[in-house]
Length: 495
Image (cartoon, rainbow, N blue to C red; front, side, top):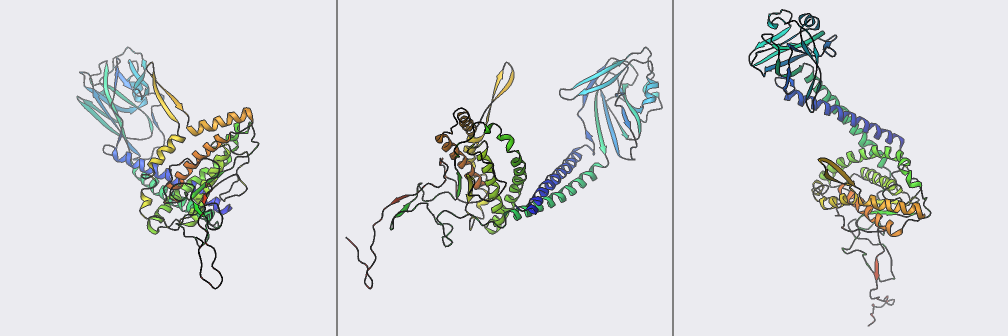
């Protein structure tokens, strides 16, 4: 692989993810800010009830602000009495509140559990009855009276406390409280994050696409077995040969094979135990494939627009995306989709005749403009359901004495590979019939991947073509043989 293109692809993926995260954060911030009441982000109203004279905010974790810029934000507090007494709510410095409530039985809110909601209090003993809170002059913001009382307080530096009492300073405070905050910098922050995120995302996507083009360029598209440079791309070709005058009969009904060939050759003398640690050995490939698959998704979208407007799949992107599928298949064949070889997969997008697993996809001369809009999801639904059944694990929920318990059923191909691995562990042999069935499932999966990734317009067959070789030999039938005409004369036929 070209180092420059690899670096470009990696940096493109990283920048794309970073830009997407920033843009998502900006959009989320904008939505939250827009949904607030008068620009306030407001919490639900919660009920609080204490038997003391006053309910105060936590002393440890009181509203303690240092070096707060002017007009950074505004705190809104609402209180509604749920008893017969009118309510008072106020904000003052912690020192003034301590002096006012010295020797008074009060309750400090220590903690809140949100789900389920539960308030944790600390009772502060005292024997003195407080004076009416509304008569005090140290409140920086306060409100009292019947119904809902609301205060707005601009955040400033200092240590502050919130106090909720009955208006007449009687004991037994029962209220519903709601808090909201409006941050002046939230709207500019949302716009800034969104714009910066989109800019970084754009740069990352461009780098990703150009990195993929660089990796895909220079490799000729795959050709079909038996095809020649003069063979029309839509014409059927068959593998196999017969005597002169023979007629090739396709091995499958329908007259032609699917233009994507997945092959795998079972190695002899597989290690009994190596499969136990292959999940560790493939880790470098997994890391590389994370970046390659990100590029695959991006370039498939780009290729989809190219097909929509031009009817052609860009060659370099085609080669890159096929290479990603090929790389994935080699790692899968080595690891837990087949366990067909102990030879470590090469770090390459290109096809290799030396490795026992390969994937080839014929390059299409033309593709349907409109089919690209529906084949990857709507038309592929029957196959996607089958692939989900073959590869997806199922979760069965049951109720065990009031508690929901889930049991996970592994996928079919996972069970088959596990059976093959256990047999290999104890006998040193890989059952050929089991291998052929596993390869048939893998082949079905990758054919669907080829179709949904927009490589071809041909619909995948509903066939479980088992075995390591994708294109079976064509049956050959004899046709009448017409002798060559004598020199200088007309052709004659033999009755």
